[in-house]
Image: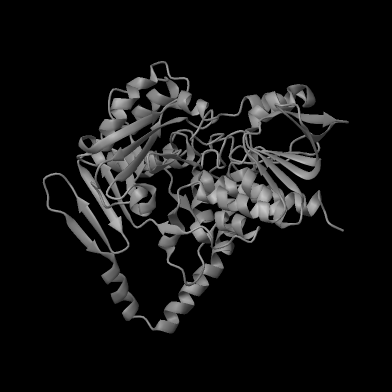
Length: 498
């Protein structure tokens, strides 16, 4: 059977590309080797709990790239969102809690300081004529694309300046440096001495472009109800409604190259599928070396792909609790300061430090109660753990438990069961580096230096976190944008309808 496009992998990049093509009237098939869609943005069932493959808060929600992917196949508004508004950042013995209404700062040995943001905003707005406020918000929303375009050339000047270099000039407060170190590491998968300052600038601007007049800016960060899998699942349902196919448990053995161009794929069972083009969401290194074969690329390109620096790998601690111990959505935790030294040990020395790791964590069942049985609670935490660690991964598990206990006191006392996914565990799920970003958004691999979605082999394209020139963002958001951009290029330049 012949198709306009074969998409290898149902990660967010593959789903978004397939959705845009199917919505554009093209005949597509998505081939996923796992028994569920989503890749690193997926979920699975266990004893009444729905467990994500990582801990994610996503950018854009119903105003961003995810919704655009769903809209392309007529599924806009299907994914429902919990907007994150109740988080805690705990650094050693100090904590910052914030939500839509107030900010609470608690430091060791002092009374909490409470700032009522809602009341302050209401008072400010009461002093300003309503027409002026409406006009100001409207202008802000309309000007964001223009502001981004103006700042883009400025951001490029920081392509070779690391976040560490930038912080060293202006920031001498250790706790704040640790906070920035953790947040940027969670966002980009690289330590501050590798992450480009320009990538942070472009990512913030990209998120701000989702803002439109009349919406609450806090609606731009959230969690999909039904678990992370609801995003790719909704796109795939739309793809099928548009006449496309989505096949699970379908492992691609190789991409067929005929006459120097990609013309289809061969599955593990020997089935041959033909297409005008092939889009791989299987990872750029894996696609070049394994699915296609390096003999089909010139030596310089092959060497460039080989040298791409991957994002950090990670552990994921998932725990089912017998009762509800917290009302927050999640947050970040640093039990012991000095994150620059910590990440040097993990990233450069491939060691596991003897202290609780810095973590990002979420409580999905607070954001969507259907993800856990009534009266129970689900906690998910992730942190850095290199897949080539010189020490046994098992060393990290009790340390990760201590890290969660630090941010959620009483956590250990209420665990019904838990699992600890290390990089080797993720291999069994078919995700070699999950839940890490495919290639690191580091100096030399961002902006115009990111690999192009269009490969040197005609008819072969890449999507996901490993490709897409001049596309920035945070993990899931970036992958979705790459898929949409690649499909739009194909619709306008390759599969042109006359």
